[in-house]
Image (cartoon, rainbow, N blue to C red; front, side, top):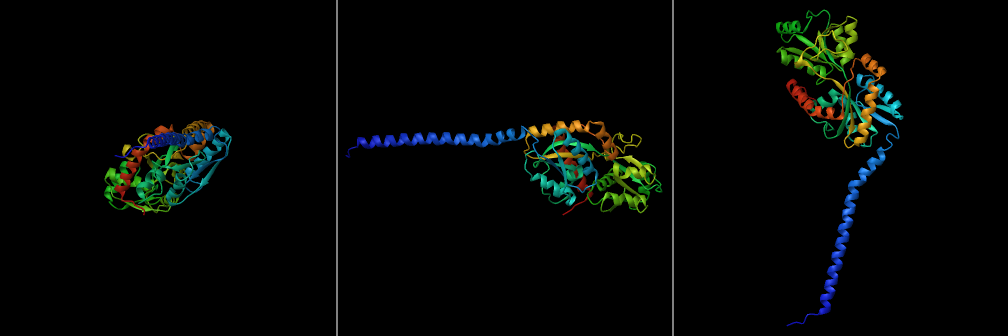
Length: 345
């Protein structure tokens, strides 16, 4: 039988005790590092937003200059800059019906200095219209608020016999496939409204896409085509001058901009909004402060008159209500696009 060395046991016990002590130190150090990893971004966010904004803010508009979305963004930016004490720069990043600018903001730093101001069609219709889009409308953004809504009008050339929606439907049924309607292009809101009208009323209309809403409206004015759906700011001047006849507003209730125009009803009611989004992960404190500041800007008489001139209406909107509305809206337009057969690769 071998003799056990007592010094060996003491040495082994001391080694185990030392190892256990080191393990406790390492575990403690790991816990501190883990806490730091979680709390550091939070501390940074709190520190960085305490004096927000401390530098200019950028509004990215994914459409070309001059459109309703661009003009609304610039009007809000001007008032907001005066309110916050920092310039708000509007940067147009047009391309791919809004996908280029939208994806740019999706990839931007969530530091409270870059935001997206976009039209409803680019945000909720594009994901269904394109085979792939370079952004996720739910995961990549934090909704801040809707800035305004603009109604769409069904208008016809004054020489077209229909004086209201019922007469239009009756005429289209008497001339199946003969009544053409102009749009701003495949998958645009005025195209989809035409498809919704066809489905709801069971009529056969012929879609003629143009490169832009202005060209579509111009040809209806000229009598090349009989009808189109157009945004209020885009076609109302022609209605006022007698160059177009309005048959109704695409809503289930009258618009405050022109209460005398008959609503087309629930099946043709759409809310065309202009909205403000932040990159996902933007600190809540920034979103809350920005929402409060813009709400005050929109409530001013100057801004209310500016929106009215543009053919848009202010709307009550919060980050929570805006976020809650998006999933159902995306699903709705996905179905409408599928029904229409519109698709862009």
